[in-house]
Image 1 (cartoon, rainbow, N blue to C red):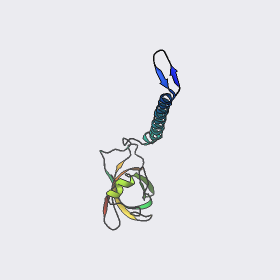
Image 2 (image 1 turned 30 degrees about the vertical axis):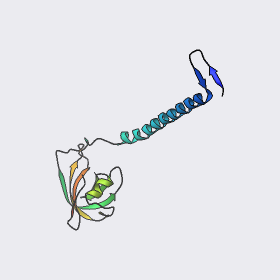
Image 3 (image 1 turned 90 degrees about the vertical axis):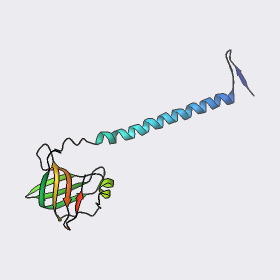
Image 4 (image 1 turned 45 degrees about the vertical axis):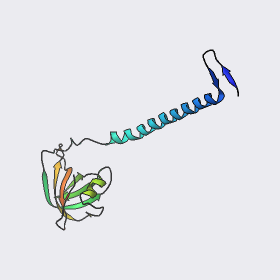
Length: 143
């Protein structure tokens, strides 16, 4: 066994290799931690605030025609048309909507629905869907 003599300590090659292996494992853990953080940050930045919706007011639309239903993450969307105006209404995530009774085929283009929503603060047509009454009379919560 080779022994390296130093005035303050004596080390074997095996102990040096053990120290190097430990240091490399720690370095790899740090690299993975940083990489994981960098993957999560864009998702956090991509999510928006709900301040764009006026949650002190509830607007209602009756007998609206569904133009599109997007059952997607991070938020689903219902697009309706009423009186020549197209409204884009944001909903919750798929997971939360499924728990509230929604399915991917709950709505289809052409369905006539009644709904309540929190309007956009800008006054533009659209907002955050609160409830929707389906053609069969079933009411679903969107938030």
